[in-house]
Length: 62
Image (cartoon, rainbow, N blue to C red; front, top):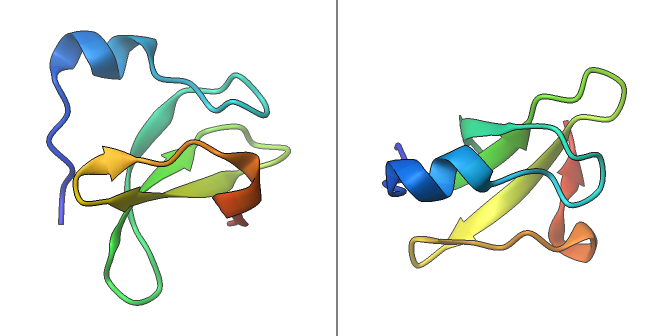
């Protein structure tokens, strides 16, 4: 499942921990996520009700 995010918002979204770009992803249970592209510390952020939750405490390592 892909997350629909306005292009202008997508262009400025970054991982709050590493500053890396975020791309669409899917979690272990099939839920939408945003995945950090940082090669050293990749993290996955949940998307709840269509809203990305960019909190380090809610992120999981990839």
